[in-house]
Length: 590
Image 1: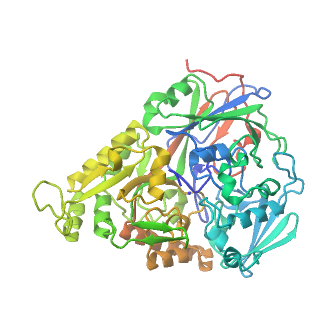
Image 2: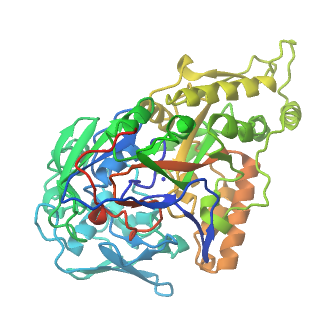
Image 3: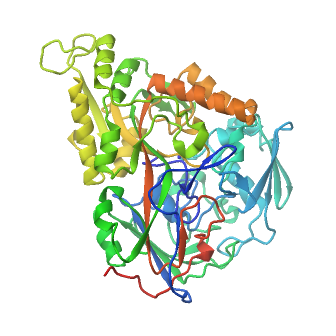
């Protein structure tokens, strides 16, 4: 859930967060959305054919193709075709037996039994897939040379992991191999997140027969992580790569769900500025469309538009410290420029997100009151007001905090009477994004805050997140977005050891509240709701991150695609092995 939307490896076929039913613990409820969730087009399916899929992004991919190193959605779209996780999940986001493995939980014994759902699975190169691959991956992720961001409390929660990391044990005592298809993990603590996809059970797996000969420090540069030699358990294997731009795939004949019906799949990175013209011409079959351009494509005759409520939110946050790689902890700087809670609160109240969402995003960006968004159903505290537009309250808070306009130029000085300028980092994207950034700066100026863009302009996508993650000293505040994944637990984003906690906000109370969410007691639904509500209220009060929007998405589907849907779960009819085409070429608009 690094880069733009992190954490979940999101793709159009596997770990999708695009939902038609807003899910909640204890059931489902209908979500508000503007378009249908599935379509069946006319026509008889042809044999094979090539599906053309557009990954709409404003920057090229990094080229990483293994989950262990993927950090952004664009890369995940490509990697998910070849490298999938261990577990499947149902419409309630709960783990089920539809994946490579299933998980069984014994809360009293603190164990998770992971069993493969088949005994004849093979990697895409034909080599046997066993539980040894899973165990190997966990052990390798614990290496001090691991340079990714996926090694977190999901792994350190395994008994014996601390000793293994410290080098005082040669193996991890909490990992007990039963046979070639089963392993028992003994945990230090059991948590409700274990029940959910992307939650607290290690889910990544890599081919031991390949990576046993590759040093962990060399993973990122290995040809097995970046080229057509990448081996996985996904529906496809790679035929051809154009670096940063496109990948052509062919079916993986060993795919555990059965070989796909298509001859090939081609995925291209396509600019938001050109995707409408490309879809109109029939060059692509499926694309998640920029909603700010809805008027330009809503009436195209050759596509059907599907909608979904995204597990994604936009937010504004602050540079409050740094990440200590040696200790694996976030370190908060009490003297950071933005470490004044009333200043941060004022920044939130200055923004009219309801107006911005309506005017700039066709009403498909909705203001959100919480860092636990309505994608998670009843866990979202709908009674909490959140940061609604209230410039007078923002001005009052700044006055109380000592930020006052001393020289009468309309801009406030800091509490010591010094000139006060906030450096804002924002990523370069669409023209609408540029408009939003300038509107935010204007609203902040209206309450007396002088906000200027870091480097004087918006920043290329990958560079932006590199600088934010590194807590560049020139950045005071930043605008970003997260894909939450399917586990509502916010610890991996805002916890004391979370590498994704780019704000580096840390407090004893925040840690205690997050620990409560992760506790055994939270297996009780009522307690769970109470714990989530308490953390949301605290996050609102501390304003270490100001949630601004949650979103609906729009997926355009060319009418030669027989069936497609945006439902949640691993067993939807858009699964790779079920997709069919009704014509050799994409249908162009009339």
